[in-house]
Image 1: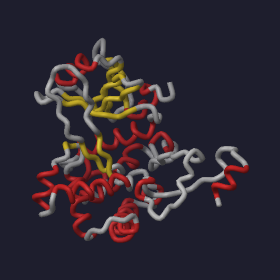
Image 2: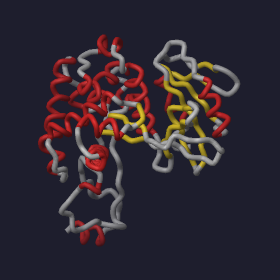
Image 3: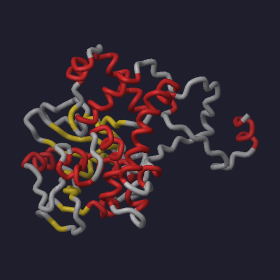
Image 4: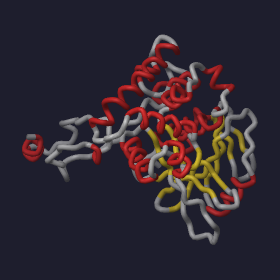
Length: 300
């Protein structure tokens, strides 16, 4: 029906079709609408979109889903997220074609939360769950295609160094991450062992939501420990290098400066949770979280 309507009037934007998963998971669709449709990946609320009604600490704790972010208190926000997690495990993922025990998938999701912002260790996950690595990989593919987690691939370049080729894993929404980790409020978050990892994932999600379709997001790590949290590639070349630090006085590692030389990036930033921007040295700028969009040059 839509194909005929669109062909008679090709003005863009007449129809908006909604889905909570990537097109690859939507089954029983006989018409792809190829050449007539554009896919737009919608993120949960970015802080830049709701800064007028919520500070970044509340947004970080509760995440970007409206029902969680706008709840009257943290208890109700957490309750909504727990219901979301349970419903996705028991109803949504099976409807998308994942034939698996929801309890097992829930355990995997929780284990990924505990490995948030770390290299994806398939062998450890396989051993812990007692499942074959191929089965674990299939489950992770579903979680990623349902926009629940994000795998960030390492950036490869011919620099004559041994590069890490394993992706890093993130739970996309920080509020869902905190529910999986059992973090009820900001005080608990500040004391939690996953504080730094949570902050890294929160900033990464904000960056991913700001980038254009042409921009590519990677991380960088070599076998000898040289690393950077985020590499933004434009036009096939690494342009921006970022280190994410939850500290009032952020100090990047020696490896971050080596990564600058390896990749020859023209913009090098350290992102921290305060507001003041200042130069760290001639090649590196410390920038406040709220000022990310200005420095990323989105749309430039």
